[in-house]
Image 1 (spheres, rainbow, N blue to C red):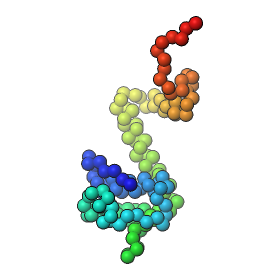
Image 2: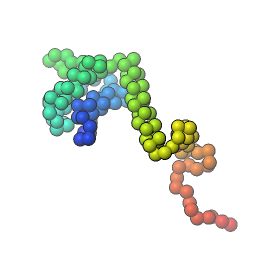
Image 3: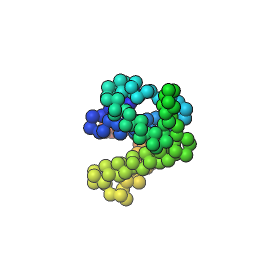
Image 4: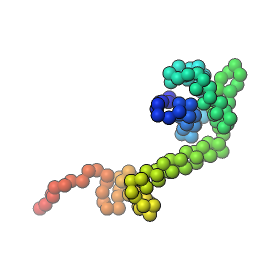
Length: 140
């Protein structure tokens, strides 16, 4: 379900991972998530770490706990849209920092993105389909 990266706080990775599942639609309103103990065992982390993550998720309205029944996804459509927008904003901020760090100017980025999108779609304005270009001539 989630993969842990030791370079970041584990509880935040759990929060972010479950939010990502909700935003992608893999975890829908009413779906039960693993108990704190089960999640801790799956991830091989302290139950206290999972408890903190679940508490944060509950405070955000992403999950709800029903005593004796478990913890369930609780995000409605408006919250899912808000979470998706927040994830987009963070991803774009990281992307822009990386582009600027590589020496590209802000004005170059839209063209680079357009080229990448076209390449990904298999059609590029220069006729390039994203496949490696041949370096030898095919002359007649």
